[in-house]
Length: 327
Ligand code: NAD
Image (cartoon, rainbow, N blue to C red; front, side, top):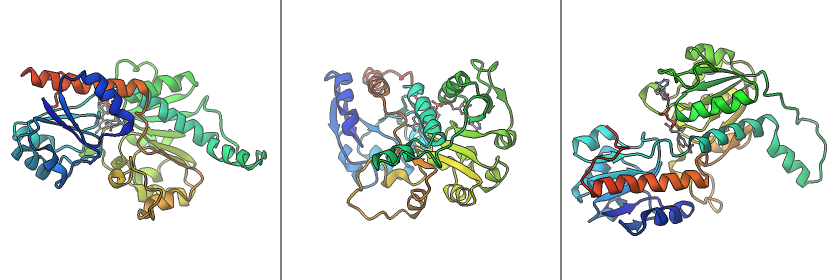
């Protein structure tokens, strides 16, 4: 199968090549997929896409015209794909679900701890030989209430890790996860917002969850609440979070994903003038920690993403339905 791999990053290249074992013909492209770059897939049976590639209806039409029939996502989330449109065109789409819930869950908890214990400020101080502890007071995680929105694969691991810290866990989900039913309390979204010291997001970005964190939900949260988003940027109305940070109602914000990340994340902009005023404002808060969509970035996750991508391509090359196929 001839495959155009869009948005190929240095960090994943070797894993993809090793997992492929020369079975499929790869065209490794640094470009992300959009209307203009869709021609780079000319003559390919399949494309492989990453989180910020544009697989909207018009772009899918362009791919289809060039003979592309298969879309292998190198991500669990598929909010960037117009799935109904792809299926209407007869295209097959598969993701890589659950490649490592531990990677994302552990990064989530790392963000909580780094914000709570002010690790970045502490390190920066010591780099300047300032060993004062004033202003670095955190809180015990033990006994605190953590609200987990979305208790699928990642939220479930987050709850288990935080159980180990002695936290009380509140959970909100449309489906209760039997694996953790005895160790979390399922509540509605408002109760979770009202009672949690830390709120962490692990629902997918869909119509129903878009801006689930907004002015109204923030208003009912505890003063000083910490928010963590390692799921998808669109779950949060970032401007409302900035207002919450300005009024000090929000005491900390950990953000691995951002609504407008597509033209910013995964690229070196160190020589550019920052054009994004929202990111610029977020960078001005000491209690905001930003990572650039790296929660998944562990060796194990990269191996699993690569091997599941090859599993999808192998199935299609053998005229089979892939186990990870989206419907
Ligand atoms: P999952 O499908 O296992 O879990 C999602 C959970 O959300 C499910 O339990 C589901 O019932 C629940 N849910 C769905 N719609 C809901 C709604 N309207 N209200 C409440 N709950 C709802 O997914 P997962 O593997 O745990 O991943 C969760 C998300 O994490 C993905 O959708 C993806 O966006 C994100 N993610 C981020 C990274 C990263 O590097 N930052 C990596 C992988 C995944």
